[in-house]
Length: 281
Length: 255
Ligand SMILES: Nc1ncnc2c1ncn2[C@@H]1O[C@H](COP(=O)(O)OP(=O)(O)OP(=O)(O)O)[C@@H](O)[C@H]1O
Ligand SMILES: [Mg+2]
Image 1 (cartoon, chains in turn yellow, purple):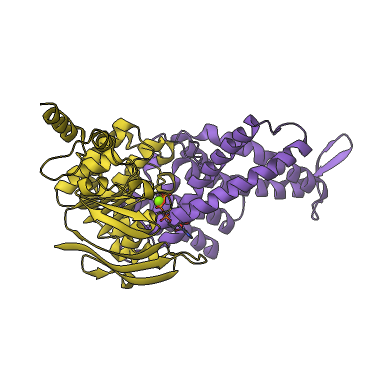
Image 2: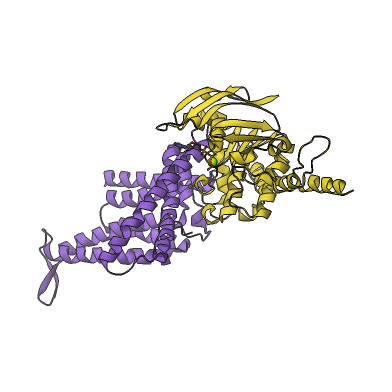
């Protein structure tokens, strides 16, 4: 089932000359884990916001083509309607704190109160979202007293509690240490396995290669490639787009080791290990 | 983080009374002494407020408030005691200056009224979480947008002072003088306010995006995480307060 269909999407922010998104088309199936990569200002955040309807409803600007999410045409659907289907986590955790709630627990309830979720249903949802992101201990803290990493976990949990079909995460682990990022990726993967469609912008290529089903490479507002991590990271023109393949892929490339079945470089530590061992024998 | 609130979390009986009842109490504390002129009603109300403040274990917090208002009130007493237009009867003389009975009574009435209002408000402010107060107003039909503005101001102002401190520290560490005479402080303030304002403008846009994502503009009937406190005791409190106000009016009309 097609969850997201984007056709010929073009978008320009008001008062700017360049297109932030230029003729982007793709389709995403239900339950896929999609990684979005690209250099700074490639248009990744703009694309995320286009899936949620913030582009064009919030920013206005020039819009062409169409984005269809779960059968709804985004350009003709209000943001609050889309918020029932799509959750969006932004880059900066600090500005995602609603600022009207005194505790983390209440902060997670904010979106649910707005959606009109019955009180009895709220609490299990909030508690499971907190448990998934490992922030149960902070339930009674003031949201502004959290560290950057804790705030980032809270921002993700706040969106997950709203139980969207599709979750879009824009660099959700920028404030987390390696251990914390890994935990968050595992949590998101768990949701993906339960059938949630995941779209994640991330600069940590090793993680993208390991967790995504498909990778979308953006550059200057254009969709350069949208394929499996092996194929995208085996391109020989990655440097041109400001991307460095995952470290394991680069090592194998240096050694000239490919996975024999596909002719592509291995992406993850385990795959690389297997191939290096084979190569030695 | 220091929240912008005087709330004292003592968890007493008074803390559990719902905010609307406390608002109604403020109304009664102002209304009843105005309707029933004379000292008794005002003093009785004041006594009741002080008793409730003691029950809520927040009297200690009220003392500085009263102390501060005393400064103003004492000057009122002195001025009215000396110069009130209706002054006839000398009460006492202090170093050749005459204080009159009428003026002193008049100013005493003002004092009782001011202290009354102060204590009633203190009872609300010191024993109610601001977010609870706003939430119950939203339940009563206040626009959620306006409610949000109220509660976010309480959270975001301390936030901004936090940013201000961070930026001051950053600038001081680069060798800028930020302390000393008024001129030095003023000169330090200008480069400080720029980043703070820019910072908050950018955050404001980002935050309004984030609010949209959390369905803030949704037209669905809002629900609340906290249960509404509709206990019988709260209903009784409201009825008693309304009855007391009605009784005051009736008394005034009859007598
Ligand atoms: N609010 C805005 N107003 C005007 N132009 C904007 C706005 N936000 C982004 N742009 C422009 O749109 C283009 C794409 O920006 P976008 O933020 O989508 O990039 P990005 O890939 O998310 O970058 P980063 O990796 O730095 O987050 C850039 O040229 C940027 O200058
Ligand atoms: Mg971005």
